[in-house]
Image (tube, rainbow, N blue to C red; front, top):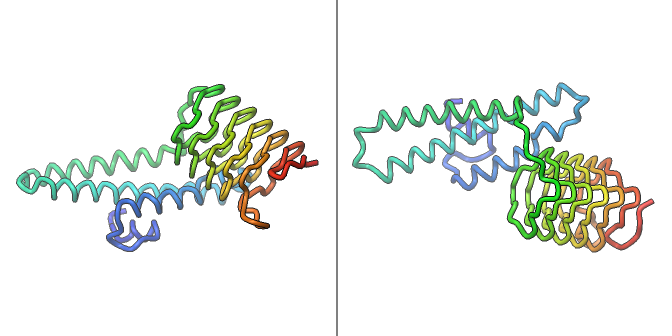
Length: 231
């Protein structure tokens, strides 16, 4: 993908968009096209999601490298004779970034067990804990806005007062979890197991409108935000 304008188009941006806009567009699109959000029994959509995410990664990486290259030239105009070396560095960065992007969803490295870990009040905004074991972990009052938590094991975890705004909890195991006074606005809990979880006082919407995605979620025995127990 050599055309920078095409990179902007892939991310739905106008040419010349700022690095901050590039990063935000990438996060939004990566959230939508993440392969783990696609049903495993639909290989056609799985393949499409993987290809689309690879394209998004490449566009983001190339625009980031382009910005870094521009900033380097602007900050050090007296080093113009090294322009060839700078371009070579840029090309190497492209190659490394592309290779990394292509391998992200082909060979996942094993992650350490985080069961029982203490993340109380931690800033975990936009962190990726996909598929990790956080059972019985302490995440009370943690900032988990826009975090990737699909298929994460949060069985028995303490998430009281945590901020899960727009968090991706697709097919997460939240059974018996403490979700009291948790902010769940915009969170995706599709297919999640919330059986026996305590959601007392959790923020799930405004007035009569529910703003949490619960398609296929298991709520057996869960204490709902209004204090009632789901059958």
